[in-house]
Amino acid sequence: MGKRAGSDGGGLRAGSLGTFDSVVMAVAGCGPAYTVAATIPVLVATVGVASPAVLLYCAIPMIGIALAFRHLGRLDVNAGASYSWVARALHPFLGFLSGWALVVAATAFLVSATLPAGSATLALISPDLAANTGLATAVGAGWFLLMAVVVAQGARISPYTRRILTGGQLVLLLAFAVAALAKDGNAADFSLSWFGFGHFDESHGFVAGALIAGVTYWGWDVSSNLNEETRSSPRSFGLGGLIGVALSFAVFVVFTIATNVLIGADAVRKNPDGFLSVLGDAVWPGWGGRLLVLAVMLSTVATLETSLLQATRTLFAMGRDRTVPAVFGRIHRDWRTPSAATATVAAVALLFVALSATAGSGAQFVRDAVSGIGLHIAFYYALAGLSVVVAYRKVLFRSVGTFLFIGLWPLGGALFMIWIFVMSVPELTGSALAIGLGALALGLIPMTLSRLRGVSYFRPRPLDPEQADAADELTGSASAAGGLAASERRDGILTDF
Image (tube, rainbow, N blue to C red; front, side, top):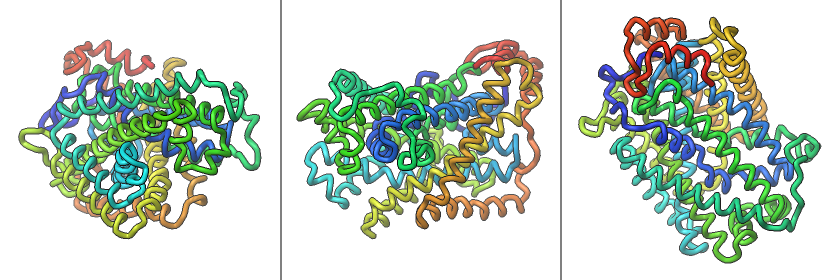
């Protein structure tokens, strides 16, 4: 297994999180209830009863990317995750842009999710209050500041907050799922053919649905950015991401089926903003809509936290490597968290929240940001999928399992993400492209400056599973967290799913 970056002075508090926390974190990062509210109505309105098929055929390549993160994390334990892996497997330039894409995407999401967090909170009190953009922005900013404080305090406090937020939304979603599946359909009768390709046509194309569903699973990889702070054995590396994708798929499919059966795509098209209330009343008349809104509020707040964690840990790794100003690599003396990175990301996000609210374009910014960050997500996910194939190229043909789970499946996921990226560009507005391609291009400036300074990040440091195994055998030491012998870790790297 690769050296744990930062364990010899990087400064993050090792062993603060357990494997269960990693799973909870991955699920929270996907934001199941938030995605149900923000993405499912758009997906149903676009492809109708074909929406379960779109979710299924987008989940399969996403699992390939999760497998890539799982096996790359076994070779290099680094808070930067893909920022470090892509640099070592492909090229430092691509690695830096991978990290930059994640930081920009997470920061843009923080801005875009602040208003919905405030609106969902106010909707529990009165729908009229939720329509007040200024008040909703203020309440959302309050939630954001609270999550920033939680993140700054460190992983010791965050898990308890995350368990409450994630557990609460999953309980509500599960209750709704059971109640919805027990209801008789008013709009359509469910059929297994909804998982096939028979319902796609010129007006309900797979491409249109895939462009929407391609980003619905994003966020599970936050567990990889916290791997320096996680107690885990090599066999559990990346397990949270796989479970997060699978659980999110189950939630999304159930709610798309319920939406198509109970209210239908036409009702969603007519009232997309009131989707939750309509679906909630169809399941539980009276309180149904408010309970769904409560789940969305919990999900949005939890996703604010995980997005902030992803951005700050990646920025911390970049500062530690001196590819951005070294101040971002500083840690708080007592909390052992990247305090400078956390403060900077929080300040930038709140500035853009204030600007979008003042300009009266908050809702439009949310739509453009969600579209633009899809390019960033597809970009760094694709690079991770390609990286694992290159890193393990010498051992890919040792077994069928290794070839499938480390080679073929991640490669398929990478090609799918490249396809999503290419197909998305012509569909985006100018402002969405500015957030997507424009913000990504800005990363060329700090990358060039750091390269000219000759920082060590740009020197060849190839990832090699055989070298990692040999180093573990020489030391004969067990993993600091998992307590597994080197021989057990070697077997796990090359054969374990």
